[in-house]
Length: 333
Image 1 (cartoon, rainbow, N blue to C red):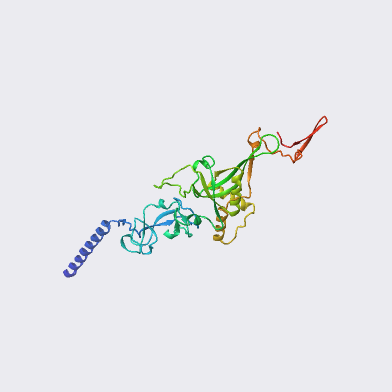
Image 2 (image 1 turned 45 degrees about the vertical axis):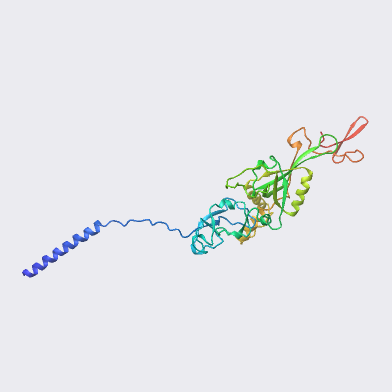
């Protein structure tokens, strides 16, 4: 073999061997790429938004609002911005409303409807003490009435604005012989509380829950119910009983099952609006009552009455004792 060709062949083999070794070392020594966490860069300042849809007249509570990141370029001057971050009005918070404690808005009333996730603006809320506050808290066609309560009839101060209560009327009905009939009846149900002793918030100045004994409670009712309450206060003693949040859902399900409500089909928004309106409506059509005889065997169940001639009226039994005949009202003790 030619010496020149042999040298070239050996050189090619050496180069190929070196290349193979180098490539092997490169692939075997290369480490897997490491995932490096990048610091989260805030998308923008935090603004106060609604956690759920807030219809007109809603009383703001602690669960109604929260802070949420918002694009800096879309922050409006009327937004409540955490810490006063800059909005469109300029740097350093100019044009934005500084807001550090959402609890200061608890007890405010929604003037214009706010959808879930929508930023809260100054013009959308009316704070307690501002002109038109109570009128904004009332729903369309509703009225505000105030009733007197005591520590026992007012649930020991555990009734707060936004709660719903039933109203119980207790009275004594006299007539005929014997003790008067004592009776309590639930004359109203599902009535919304607007304020207690002119307080529209359930928190103190520091935002902490506060329970106070109250003497008056302001309620939201229809004009007809307002008339009934005015008369009821002259008849006997009014007491309030606090309703559970779940009661409204049960009442609504019962009304739908009984066919009392026609739920619109095919329109989810209309259905939701109708169900909310029904759930918020005070009820005065199905009163219940309890008389003294239901509590104690020594109390009456009915009221015996007599006309001008001394003859018992109503269902009675004729009792003859010799030549004496008398009428005894049914249920009389």
